[in-house]
Amino acid sequence: MVEQKPLIGITGRRRKGEMLRGSLKVMNHLPFDVYWVDYAQGVIAAGGVPVFLPLSLDPAEIIPRLDGLLMSGGADIDPKRYGAEPEPELQSIEPARDEFELKILELVYECELPVAGICRGLQILNVHAGGSLYQDVPPHSVRDKAPSTRVHDITTEKGSILEKLYGEKLEVNSLHHQSIKTLGKHFSASATSNDGIVEGIEHSQLPIVAVQWHPEMLDTRDSDPIFKWLVSKAEVRKL
Ligand SMILES: [Mn+2]
Image (tube, rainbow, N blue to C red; front, side, top):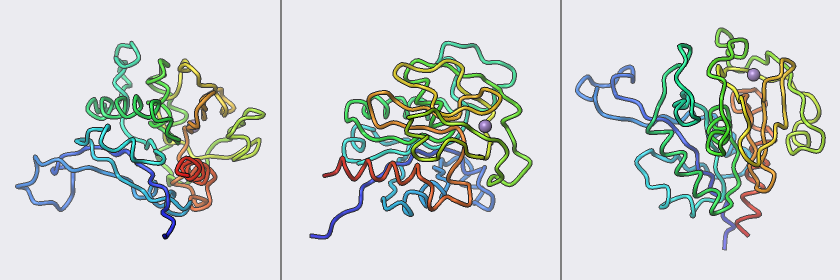
């Protein structure tokens, strides 16, 4: 029998046809799901098979069948999910996606599925675990340069998974305008920027690691260690 590669779920976002340039006007009100291809490319290059997860799917139908999960970037999380009032700097929110991803995470913990989180993915993992967010950190929202531009350093914690993957220091891109304020239960900060922003977290008991930068947008995407880590954990789980 041919050995099958592990299945890695990838979360996306929902939009309306009117936001899709070139689509027929008659389709303006129809929903479509968006998945940035770089996440899937990172998974493919690491030896996994990406599975896009549409928001309409009942997570119970798919999460137990996956070998790993990639929580992708996207809109701000509704502050009420972490007990805060919306501040003026809050950008667009997507409550249906919050709902979907929080349900996914319930099952992730039940199934002990390996997870890598990126940007919003890190934030939703933290909020699900009872942590909170700063609603705006302008110096980290560098959106006037190519997304692959490395703009600040991060330092990893000694002995952490992120240190093993990336070494002590790494220069990263930075497109996020929010960041972690208080950490969720069982998570520790395993990477920080020079100005004290949490740039990476990991779970103390389960294979869950997340970063605030976008490794999938860097020119090192196809050899980035976080995708390899996720796929290797997924392979072990599959055996
Ligand atoms: Mn940053």
